[in-house]
Length: 352
Ligand code: UDP
Image (cartoon, rainbow, N blue to C red; front, side, top):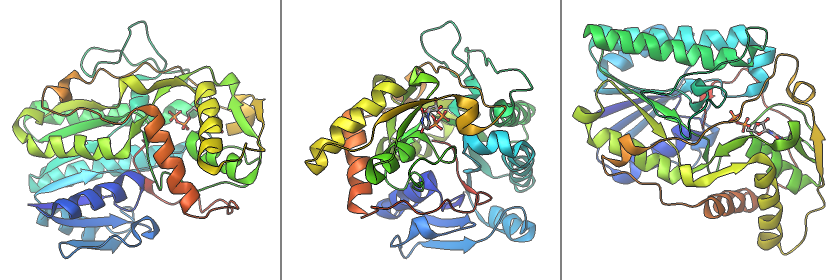
């Protein structure tokens, strides 16, 4: 089979490329605006195009036509951007992704669409998020952090409607905070906004800067080892009939933690891995000061993963191992000083 990965150069995409190359069963074609995360990743059945899906419609159309399966990972996954550039986020995460789905329909290609756990929004009343029964609880329009989730949710609804009409064969993935090497760039000591929580905390530990807890760090997230995420993808590949026109949570409900406890755990692991206590101190910061006006956070319930575990997948890595291995990767990369933030307009892989 020929698999087209759009967003292959991001965190999730680069790990999927590695996984698929190692399995050696399929031809893999990748597309992204940058290839730095793919450095050293190569195989005879892997080819890569440096291209922006917004500027190369003919190329993208041809690649979709020539593929058997399209995996769409293209998204801005950066909460700062949701508040600073909401229209750009909507354009990429909804309009451009819809265009990809339309091209899949035109060529009758199967689509695996990476969406987001964020579509559940603020934690509702249940104990877990179930793909087919849990409501989405999104904040007020003025809190434009939610434009990301709204765009992703609308895309899911449109795919669902096309599936119901018989126009499209799709599978939707809702990732719950994937974690692993290459997740994001490091930031200079004390930087506000930008990447996800793990890169912020590891940057702080490496540079001796403050570990900032947004709004007290009381909200929960579940973290999934990227290797477990790869295996979940493989399960989807192996079960095309059972996953047809279905939505799947991919996460580890056993790795549920508050952001405050995540910080404490990373401090402890830093000392274990380096043999030295970190210089960094924990500080508190208001969400709108850290990310900008329009930011609002939500507690998140752990995922119900029974739909995918019924197909044989099971996450294997506990939280401590997931954090230890990811921290080790950052320590080994020798990144002692955090570089300046990269161009924020870069397209990178789906939220994790
Ligand atoms: N967060 C934090 N300090 C940081 C970066 C993030 O306390 O330096 C918080 C953020 O407000 C959110 C949680 O960590 O409550 C997870 O944020 P992330 O951007 O990683 O993922 P998401 O909110 O999309 O799950």
